[in-house]
Amino acid sequence: MNAKKIHAKQGAPEQHPTDVLYTQLWFHGLKARSGLESTQALELVIEPPLGEPADCIDRCSKYRSYEAGLRVPTRIRGKVYAPDLAEARFPGTAAVLDSPLKTLLKREPCSLGWIDEQLRAASTEVRALLFTEAPSNIGRSPGLQFFDEQRSQALGSLGTFGALTAAVLLMKRAELIASPELRENAWRAYVRAVPKVSALPMVVPVAEDFFNAIDKVFKHWVYTRPDDRMDFQVLVYATRKDFKGSDEEYIEAVAGNVRGMLVLRSMTRSLRMTGLNGESMLGVDFG
Image (tube, rainbow, N blue to C red):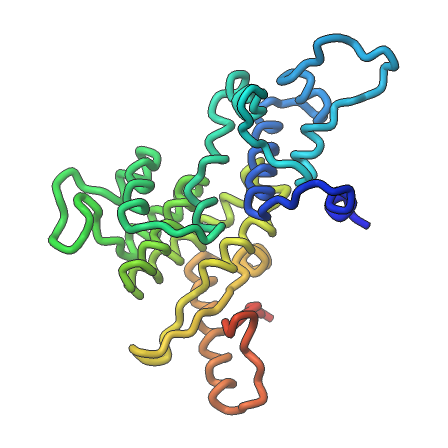
């Protein structure tokens, strides 16, 4: 029985998988920023005990629970909040816990205005790609530029966690305004950002779970006709890391695999392409 099942069996409240994932992202980013090798050392630096335990037993367990995904930081009146204490010692580490991407992965309702507000709160380099100083054309949010292939390449090449978050926010924006072109260019920006973001210290230990969570919610849109859309879950992290080629070659390879599956679908009724909730699943095979 793994640690999570043992924890659940002991009666601990079940945590939302996305909250667990972001707790681990925060923990690994914090540990990398601290430069400390052990979790025990990290906890002792951030929350040192008031006195030495009489039995000399190692009781540093809270941060190990964060690391293992058994515990999620929660704000409780009158009690310390671990991310605040860590932020005081290592500024900037708590920001990931408030990422708007977490809201999207939890499938919480959000408006077009909220999406644009999050994009305006992005880093300077991301805002420079997405916004103009003057209001844009009628029908678009003030200052938000048309997100074309050139901007998709530029956003993806930044390779930062914030750039990847912006790409996913744009995919959600495409859903809200029903824009296939924005969805495609935003998905491509996301694909281009994956290799660099997956190498970030806070992402490395949970990369597969993190990107699979995104791919599950934000599927690749494919139109067989203008009025017929299919949603494919492309496992971007797993397939991209094994692909020997450029981002553009990878994107074309995905398109080729999708076309091949659609041809097979049209040729036989026995091909099972339907996953959970009637959504098509695609584990791209590059041979």
